[in-house]
Length: 400
Image 1 (cartoon, rainbow, N blue to C red):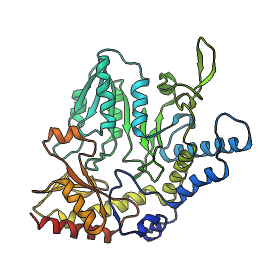
Image 2 (tube, helix red, strand yellow; image 1 turned 90 degrees about the vertical axis):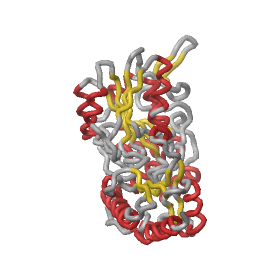
Image 3 (cartoon, rainbow, N blue to C red; image 1 turned 135 degrees about the vertical axis):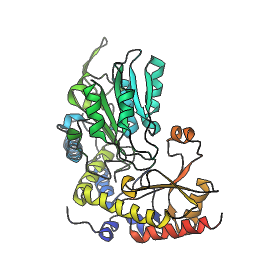
Image 4 (cartoon, rainbow, N blue to C red; image 1 turned 45 degrees about the vertical axis):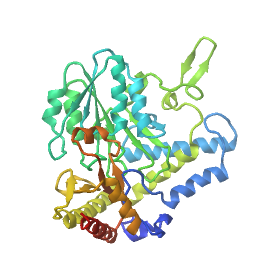
């Protein structure tokens, strides 16, 4: 870690030289030039196929991919590189688990009431096989209710699938307590870490999670990249989801022998440039320091909250305390549609925010809310940008 300096960090993101205040980081982060350069390195110096050929270009691809796998392993504290499966995004990683585990009619999956569709729909789809999906509701302010989890658990519960940090309101769930409670009942835990890995230190072994998925595109990495972590013994027991090239050791007209981890789940020719770029993104995050990033986001959220929470026309979603919402500030302006607010922010000062249901339609439908506006902060955002955002939101509030 070289010491956090936001102005120095911003120089690594050329897009920020435009008229832009980028507060849509919970959807997708910007990419530093180091990641783009590393991807270009693949295309310019060793644009070959990995895992198959034996020539020097192919060997370099294999080397760079395994370096990237090692960077991911170190970033999330996994015990082995074999436990790191490269996928396209957290969605694919979660689906891999949903399709890879052996389900029986009557098995139960517990989810929270604030799951992204990516950690809800794969389990709802299992209802076709007789799997029961139970919803563990949180507290009124959006924080997790451990008692409700205990009440949801039964002898038929097989898996708890829970978001680490909510993309709706930024609330962090107590994963260590959830895992301890689930494991005491012989239940596995899958964590959607798409909103945690880019923003705070994560150690999957300390948390003792069984499965953990995250996306590269939210963590300074390329689009179409992601990771599924799983405990080695569980991954070995899981069925393959997609099969074909690279997923087998040998085949005949009658059958085939499965590859070993992690190739067992990495079917077909991979996005080598993307994976290598993701490795560089992991290095970048570690150089900056996840604790420093977390502090910066909390500082920005506290500023936005202190300046806007007293406005009677602002309806804040989530806990009142900024420190409980990570780098997420989700709100509505009374009397205005969320999409209109977002368009006005973009048109006035180039402020990029997300509006709508953020793929958490289930929560919005349950609360009879059409949508919301979400400003989400990251390491390259500044206090001056927050003040510009606040000023424009206040102007919008004056219109109603």
